[in-house]
Image (cartoon, rainbow, N blue to C red; front, side):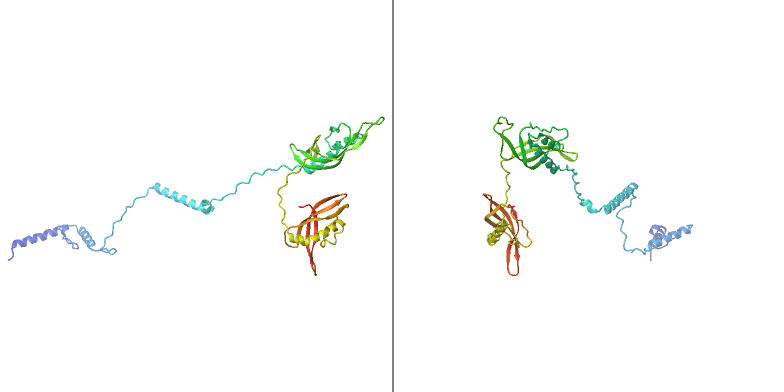
Length: 369
């Protein structure tokens, strides 16, 4: 038979479990003690049911992971800086759209400003200066002791008002100007310039002493000669005026050194082919009728009277192609009792007809240039 003591002990354990809420089985409503509030009991019962019922939106077998960061409230100053940065960034983007990003990376290379324009001084009126100096040189170097007023009147028209029209002449002797050749004009200062004039003069000198009862000795003419004269002028009030007495200067003994001029290449075969044509032309040239030996339409005046052809001493044709060719001819002329060799540039053209073709002279020029 079972021991009555065991039965009592089991009964006591069951009674203790029913009285302890923590030992209650989930999902069962614990026994309510006498005098308990029924609303509290109902709430406890509902809570127990919710704990035992799984949530539909999340699987019961899986638990949601914990969030790896914590949310922190942003400070007002940080938000203001962020808005300011965004504003600056959008401003830069807008400026780039307006001006172009390329102009930031590769700036436009603006041209250097042009140099300041320098106003060039007006050119000196060389033509007027040469004309004034040439007239003055003729009047200044022409004198005649028998007619002193003529020189004074000529100089008065060229010198400034109230100038000394004697211009340094002592009133003696006789001299004539044959040719005046104005040359270089060298500007100096204050509108002044120096004009070089070459003058061919003819001076008459007295030979011996005056005979008794005669005023003058027999005149003897000297050889004509060239002299140099440098005339000072000034440009004022729109004209060039001689400022005073000039100075006689010497003539150079020789000309300047020539540059290294390259001679044209020659064509010996063409020169031999046209030698007869050139000789025939110069014979007609000396005779005064070139129509038969010149190309159609060409007009070449004859040489001056008094020149007699001795002959063509050389003919060299320049290298070239086509229907127009040139060459250099050296021709000997007789002038009076003398002979003189001269140089000509001869231009030839090829004239064709139905039967044949030939070379004829179309033009001729003196010199080798």
